[in-house]
Image 1 (tube, rainbow, N blue to C red):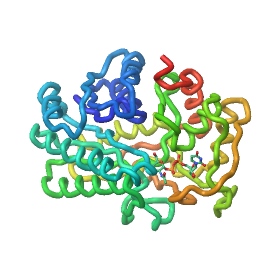
Image 2: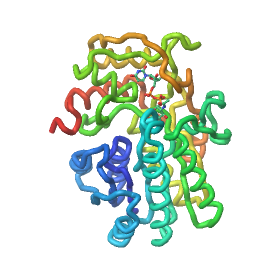
Image 3: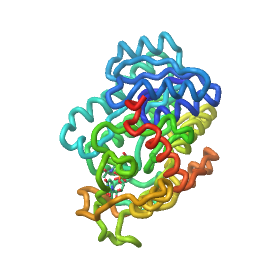
Length: 338
Ligand code: UD1
């Protein structure tokens, strides 16, 4: 298949491009490099033994997208491109709605003009909001709690309306839980710009000496060890989930929603200790105040993805930490290290 991947130089995008190339697909990546590096794609090409095509463009630029559809004739799209920092989204909501929501509308309009109606969308477990008990199941009423989450929710609504308007659309909404880890080669991985917002990238930067210690946000939650529980998923498992969704859409039209998670909760301190085991050294940390907006615990019910896609996670928390650490150790400054 010929597949257009938006945001394909990013963390999840680059791992997915590698999975697609390994499965024999032709890939063209569109990315504006706002938070990522083209070096990721060069390394993906080295690992796969062949390259993805790359076009530096913004998804809000419909003319640029039209040119990509005309030149590469993709048959399906996997859509990752978007801004993803929750805290930042509260400060600059217009940037989030413009890039994420308007950008997706621009992409979908261009797809329609070129008769491409198969799309896998990068959504998030954050759409479940605070009212739903874990484990989350796809049929729950969604309701995100911040502008970033609402962009994901709005895009899900737009795609659902589009699917209802025309039976030719084939749409997968993939709700990711907490992606961590890296390709086992240590060549590609997560490369956050500035201070990492997410737990494992922060731990990794402490372990490699770029930061002094981890701040554990809250030790007094009603959880077994007082720290929050999350459903961590290895990024390579997550990438495989996209390939599985695409295979499903080849056989099934309509709009489909799947959780991509392990179905297990792991606490912040358990994750820290698993990372220490991977590094073979203690990692300094301090328990501090809770972070606004954090939920005490959530995890996926991943049974729909297993039933429909034959997909489930295969990698353990220990593997997530070992692979994440190999990437961080070999590339202490991320892609800038090369
Ligand atoms: C966050 C976002 C979510 C987004 C996801 C992936 C919030 C409220 N949610 O999820 O919308 O889809 O990232 O980008 O931001 N922690 C620390 N110290 C740190 C960093 C994190 O203790 O330095 C804790 C957090 O309090 C939380 C857990 O680690 O309990 C996981 O945090 P994080 O990696 O940011 O993921 P989520 O908050 O689950």
